[in-house]
Length: 276
Ligand code: ADP
Image: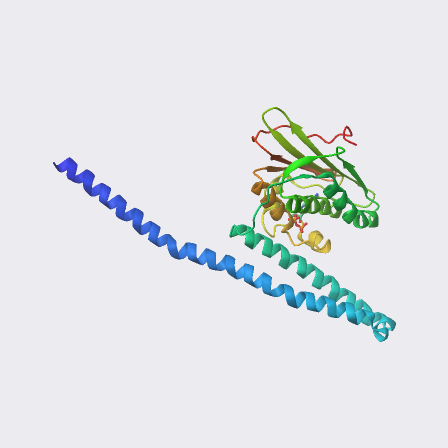
């Protein structure tokens, strides 16, 4: 009887403890939710004044008296750069706040990824040209995949923008896209390889953290604020994929993404000219 009572007492104590801990978690969960909503609302509200500021600066730049005054023009150009930087920061914060709250829908489209990749290459070409960096795209004639076309295109943009930003003048950047298909599964492989400054092994994981920048002053100079790779990781994981970096300091970095369409299975993704 005594043993039975002890077991019963222990069971009741465990049950009460479970209920109490669940109740104790409620305010913590609510605080997290409120914080996420605050970041999302604040980012959303900041977008409008920023776009008003940008169009006002554009209008001022077009007035004749300002065009004639070099100093004012320089000030306006600085203001414009900072407003653009802040707009990007606010938009990235909004994306991450929405991803946290699960309010962004991932579309399941079937589409050809090649034209999207070509568009991204075109968009980053001026930045690459300004540093005499050669951009190479390796992609088959058609590359039909499943996923969210807009988000996967954003992923390419983030990785290529970084590859160019962190590669010194005259370097090389390769974007390779391929699909490995077999009877049981299909896997999209994206490889972005650069001949840039490289990343220290101890930073491999941390660069995917929000606001983490391996070299703060250099990254700021480049216009970065440390949210790009956090968004890239979220996009990949929302597609049940993996993102992996390998690098050699002073030689370059390679980001490899694998996104399964049907069954997840790891395989090597290579940078090759086969698909040129
Ligand atoms: P940022 O806006 O600073 O570029 P990211 O989240 O995109 O933010 O990247 C985080 C950090 O990872 C960067 O500040 C940089 O230190 C490092 N990094 C990202 N991509 C590369 C790359 N291709 N080569 C070297 N370092 C990189």
